[in-house]
Amino acid sequence: MMDVTAPGLAFYADRIKAGKPFAFVRYGNGEWDCILGLYHTTRSGSQRFTPDLRDALMDSLQAPRAGDYFTAMQSTNFLKRVRILPWAERWLMVNAPRLVWHDGEVFARASRHGQLNPLVKAMRARHTIIVGPPWLKKLSLADELIPVRSHNCWQDVDKIYRKLARKADSVISFSAGPAAKVLIWRLWPEIGKSCWLVDLGSVWDPYCGVQSRHYHKHVNKAMIKRNMA
Image (cartoon, rainbow, N blue to C red; front, side, top):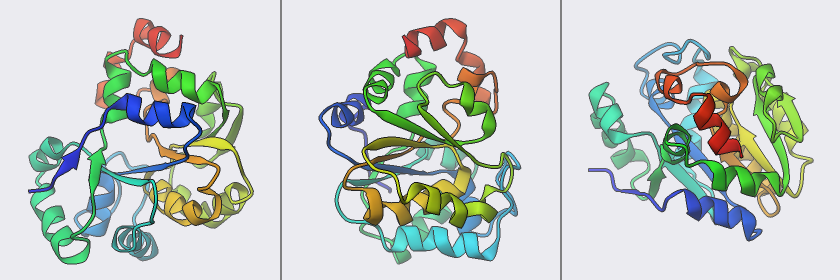
């Protein structure tokens, strides 16, 4: 059985406040569908899987980065429910048996329960770059937006990488599907000494008027106000 550590939201927010860079990269059903060859796109339809994307995702797990590079797993209960978890565990046992997993639901859960404010406050105190679809420009804590395609942004992965490889002293929030995992893996040796590389997925969508996931219906105006205060 996969062992998942859950240090809680404050662990990550406090590291941003204290000036201690880290990477947080989350693997969910989309990444596993691609790695295991179970599906041809993400379930949301946002990314078509290609052989080079699959190879890059596998590389990112088989050759994990050193230092404060936290690899996170989507809810194991959910992965079990959609019948991915046993296949993922078998693959990991053979290909990446020494990985230590963090709780991949920490940010989405905090958003849903009105407890995201410590992370938001920590990000506001630093230069924050949002890597994601154009509607995230509405996000109030974004100092800079690097827009990506809402569908199939993997085809631009090298261009996005070149834009980010010059950054420093920034919190970089990624909302770019499976491509985000590869970008963070590639960028960590280049800018990880001064940047926070955080895979936040679809967390910010409801803050910009887009409900792209089922749980977003619980992130209402009052919850958004509390989280962003």
